[in-house]
Image (tube, rainbow, N blue to C red; front, side, top):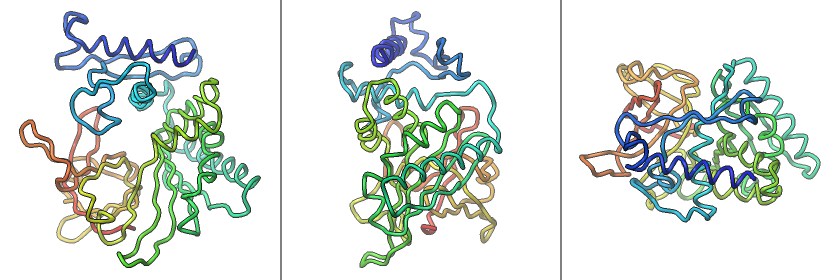
Length: 326
């Protein structure tokens, strides 16, 4: 039932993005915005807000322009849901106190489930909790530990269950201490969006996937990397592009009218004070960190780093200089 409902909705949204829908109204700027709800979502006080899906799949695959996917495929299904869960909105405003309480409860449930099967467990702490987002850190003592699948297997049934439908964005971060190597100090730093963890829990609860399949989907579709090299932006010379979702964790005054930012992807950045104030960056600000530059119609994905914050749907980009992994 869940897949049938999802497929019907995604097909409708794709049709609305075509020229012959509503006399082409949804193909022009400003875009068409949709609020989506049903009896289930209304009873739990949340809904989705999204736009017509003209380029389904482009966001998930990292390409610009339309990407045509078989509508019976798992890729099409996940591409539609990735876009939809990013637009999930609570009908009731969040609060910092409630976010902190939920985050601490999620940590307790995760560690309790982990201790049933493991003698070694990470520490679980709240990196940041605001009225809009929650960032949870799992700190491991061994650099190899987070690569073991069983340490993320319990996330949907604990963190996902606790935060499902709460309306908070954010991430779970898995990280280890720095270790000296021939390439310099390195570590493991993984990030998983709370939306993805909640989605895996919902897929399991609906009966569409069992616990193992839900975890496999989470691992293959939602895991991202944070800052894993201490003294350089990229781990090795084969990398030349960057796209991370993060938040400002803390900031302080830098030299010569600049501001130093620590972000939840584990990196330290420097921006000008003018850009810091123009984009209204502050502790808790949700941001996108990219190396993407646009010249005319051409998009280069190996440009200088940029920190972008959305303000009521309008992006504000601040050029940034990478300093180090913190």
